[in-house]
Amino acid sequence: MSDALLSVANLATGYGDLRAVWDVSFEARPGQVTALLGRNGSGKTTTLRAVAGLNPLHGGELVYDGRPLAQISAHARVKLGISYVQEGKRVFREQTVQENLLLGGYSLGLRRRALEGELARIHELFPILRDKRDSPAGSLSGGQQQMVAIGQALMARPRLLMLDEPSGGLAPSVVAEVMARVAELKASGLAIVLVEQAVEAAVEIADHVTVIDVGKVVVSSPVAEIDDLERIKDACMGR
Ligand SMILES: Nc1ncnc2c1ncn2[C@@H]1O[C@H](COP(=O)(O)OP(=O)(O)OP(=O)(O)O)[C@@H](O)[C@H]1O
Image (cartoon, rainbow, N blue to C red; front, side, top):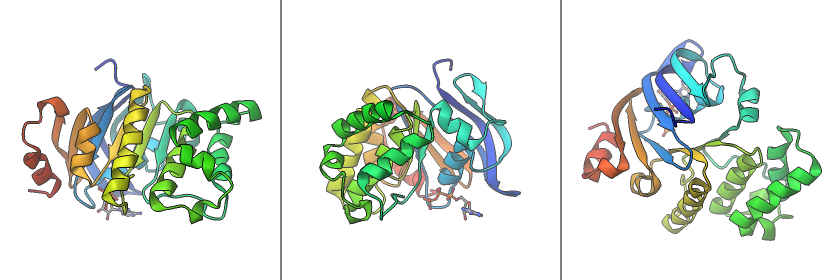
């Protein structure tokens, strides 16, 4: 549909010539969360990596803001507003929280004043990152490190934010906190693609759910039309 910021159609991708994703289609819209669900190894991360430009396009089409992405490098995609937060809270552990955040802005070549504006915005969303600005990122809790990783991606002023299992390894109360922040980002107008194992938490903030199994879409549904969450959970288990 025309209001999609990202449209993924019949994506086939993998690692080198090795195919891991055969046929995946979904869209991301401003102010909405598209949840990509599925069991381990189903192809969710590979799909996000292809959108970020880190894995090759074997087939299908990626269209962002009306333009095909196929010939656009990963670096140029960041500049166009596509940010990808990898699985596993990848922060520079020895660097301070502030240094980690600033690194996210350098990719755009932002000037100091612009960087400070972005920092203020991120501190407002995650006040803990202001309080801990001078602490090494590695000294923070798992949930706080996830916020650093998301904050770093936000420094590049994305329009499309792809989050790969932000709840991974976090206690349930912390998962709720991270999801609440993701919901705020959605309310701010970002288009979000959320890969999750925490099905219920993801469905709670999602507008659309796409379940992948063995590199193919097995369920695609607006959340408003899901009347049986068990069916989604079964699909996520490959049943
Ligand atoms: N670096 C790699 N080289 C080759 N194959 C890979 C590589 N990384 C993943 N794969 C394979 O690609 C397939 C899809 O994996 P992918 O990581 O995309 O799944 P996933 O749905 O994100 O799972 P998880 O929830 O475990 O992260 C799997 O069969 C996996 O073994």
